[in-house]
Length: 124
Length: 335
Image (tube, rainbow over all chains, first blue to last red):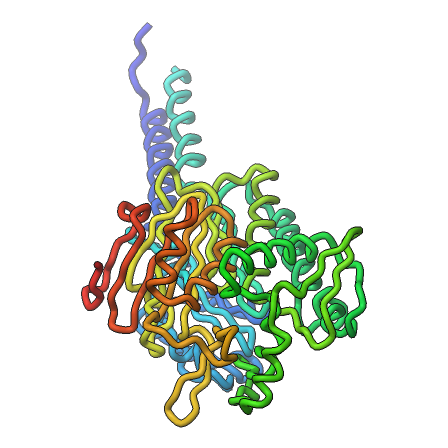
């Protein structure tokens, strides 16, 4: 009972293949419209999610901390805290590490962007 | 005819479920005077995360030097009276006394009277007068802590407990215990640089960076990588908390004999072992001992590894770490 493939069957077949392919690509992150972003939190509450792909300068609502995103690199450029340790923390380029301002209870970390040589934590 | 679609549909379903591994759950908050970051890589739920942070808060509420309701605060203000404390506090004090004896006083939970004078880590940090220090030193002696029956504890009038060099380690162990009971097999507990790893990442060890102890410009930059699984690493160094006066650095690890910051050839010491309370207490003690004495001490103990970094960038690691320590910065010399 071999029937010939009809045009409709072929169409459905192609449709399925297309859906399958796009799901696959989406999962691989190729169509990831959200992209990698920077999470800014204060008192452990997330107060902003910033696109890493957009160069920008962001200040916390109280004006205590100002950060910069440039070419995907995040750095704290200004803080009103006494120790300035956050300003002197190595800029972030991927999800390894974070920048923390302990006096102002502000923390920055990158979500998404991972690297082969990812560091899971730093002992200090 | 329709049957040819079935394998196709199955294939597509497979694509939906299998491509992305479970995202780890990460939460960061402030406790025990530092930033605490927990990463749960499996069996992660918001409820469990909340439970872990609640346990952390509980320990903080009992062992803080500044919170007026804490056991430690109450003992410090009990004028020599015995008080009943929570079993957490009692256990940590027991451990603290044990490490005091073991290290010959290099770890001392009664250094509080001296710590209070320096106020390092606050804006009021200043050099105390030698008279003040001398007086404060008369109250420094871990043997003065009396652990009585029924969770009663007594310290003499004038003595000041400071569990800052041991409470974080205890908290890490306690949180890992809860996570384990809830079925978590892969997690990281990072309490301001005290790192405890549970399990590994899909069969690969966790990669823990070791903070470079010199450049204040680049906090968050490791000079070496340590591969860890089911172990903890705690680092002590003079770069963590300090203030400067007349070009001289005064850091937070104080000498129990002089009352001044410890001065030796070490820039940092990292201790690697199974229990974080042990690593926490001993990292402070071994840093205070200095390189030679510290090394001899490490070698005299079971299941205890260490990384020593001197001010002239010489790095030495104990034999148990030869496979898991990777030096990345070539300006350091490994011995």
